[in-house]
Image (cartoon, rainbow, N blue to C red; front, top):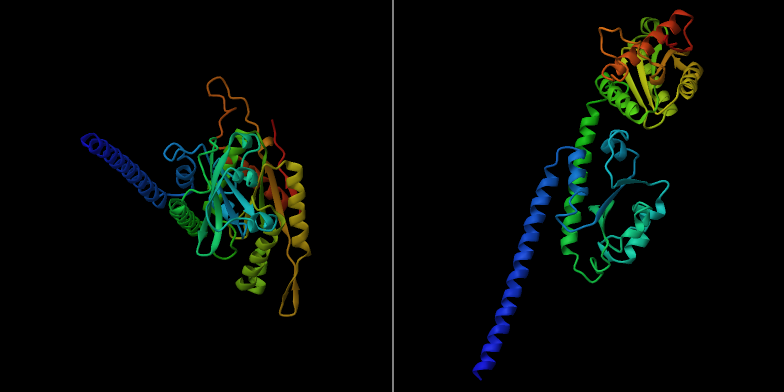
Length: 374
């Protein structure tokens, strides 16, 4: 009898130890989750947020993390990645117009299991898709609307079982969705500060920052970039004859037209007054010339009806490309400037401005490419 009682006591202690260990693990997991939730809510900007979201594999014992956001209005990718200048491995975007079926197939609640890997392989790098055996998919929801999904991938087929509870995953998905939405809204506010109040083109502050960043990126990637400098011909006469309200209408119409004729990754900015600049990243001079010529010809075809009179305007455009800019060999007393990119952006803009001046001096309503002298 005594032995039996000792055996029962031993089993009871073992059960209690197991429960205590489980409680400690749960407490540790909850603490990790709380710390993680606080860190993503407090993240300053997309870079910090997505580093936290995509690089927490060790903490939660995950082999790979993927996040895909639904870009309903073609703005999320631009806001979060600064027009593709910043990239976050593991982050992708779904275009609503081209991916309606993918979006309609997204679940409303977390799902787990081995078949998730195959069903959502479009989220995984093709070269890596065979590495993962099970996954958990978390719909990121705000209210009843899914704003994206997170995929947690494991090389262990037993890591995610479809019978596992999903309460923790619900909480995790909710915190991530809130953090991403807050980040997007902050970026929208910042973006408003980068726009010209009249025309909604980017302002000069944004242009200066973006031009430098794009030049640096194109130099690193060994790709070309073209800068357009655009000026409205005889704009002072428009203001003097028709008034400043009409002049404002002309500038607004011009920006709308230019934005329609360039890519979403290009930058249309109001440099000052009736002067505008356009950055065409990853573009050669010949293609840029075609873009500039389309802008020039479309502007010339436009007409505003003012008090029964037809008002037509034209623009002069100067172009300069990154590939055309070559530094002269430094003399023996100076350092070689061959690899110096510190002032390439200003040199590029200066050359485009010189080409614009030439266009205006030789008749206006034309496109001129700055010829470089070696």
